[in-house]
Length: 331
Picture 1 (cartoon, rainbow, N blue to C red):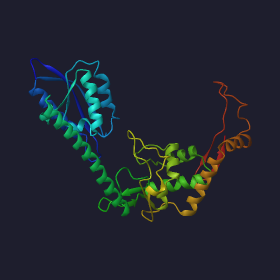
Picture 2 (cartoon, rainbow, N blue to C red):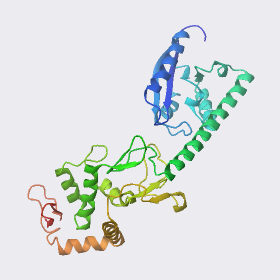
Picture 3 (cartoon, rainbow, N blue to C red):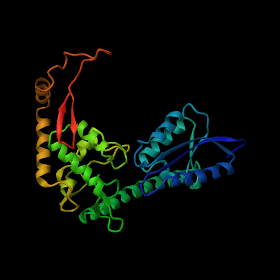
Picture 4 (cartoon, helix red, strand yellow):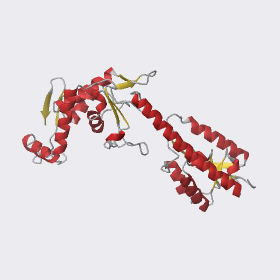
C-alpha cells in the first residue's frame, strides 16, 4: 500500500433485527486485521446499528461523508461492498464524493474490487448490482413470509401491544393478564370522563407500566384507545414502515393493504365499551375549540382572574380524581 504508515477510518453497519450488535464487532475485527497487515492506522470508527444499506439515511455514514473533506486520512475501510451500500446509485455517488476528498474506499474482504483497473471497475459494478438485487429479493421474501404469518394470525416481529405476549412455540398472541387489566382500566376511565392526566396518575399509583417498563404518557394512552387489537382483531401492515426507527402512529395505509382478521387474537375490550370510547374520541375531535371554551366557562370560572402570589402566573383549570370512588374533581 506504499511506504510509511497510512491513515484510515473504518465504517461498519448491521441492518436487521435478526442480527446482533456483535456483527459490527466482527466486521471491525476483520478490518483491524487488514489495517495491521497493511501498515494502516485507524483514526476513527463510524458505525450504524440496525440501519438498512438500501438508504443513505444513516447518521454515522453521513457524518463520515461530511467529515471526509476536513480530516486527514487516506482510506475508508469497509468489511465488504454491501456494508457500504446496497443501492448502486448511492454507492457510486458517495464513492465519488470521497474520491473528490482524496479518500479511497477499501473493501477488506474483496481485494479484487480495490484495484484501479477496468476489470476491477467492472467487477465492482457487478457486485453493487448483485448487492442491490439481493436486498430487494430479500425484502420480497420477508414480505411474503410476513403475509403468510398474518394469514395464520401469527406475530410478525417487533414488540407486541400492551396486554399481549407471544407464545414462543406457536408465535400466536396470548394474554398478559396484568397488562390487560391496565388496558381495561384505561378504557373504563376514559369512558367515565376522566382526563388523560387522571388516567396516567391512576396507572402510576397502581404500579402499571408500559410495555417498555416506562410510565405512561398522553401519546401512549391515545394509541391504546384507538388500537383495534383490543377488540380481538388481528391487524397487520396497518402503519407505514419506520423511518430512522420512528413510526407515524397517526398515519395508516390504504384499507386494501391492511390485513384485519376478527377473532385473530384474545379480546380485552368488549364491543359496547369500545364503541362508547370511539364515539367520545370522535366527538372531542369534532369540536375541540368549543369544548375548551365551554369547559373554561362552566367549570373554571376564575381562569385568568386569579394569579399565583409567588410568581404571578395566571391560574388555569385542571381536573382529576381517584379511581376508587369513581369521582372527578375540578380545581
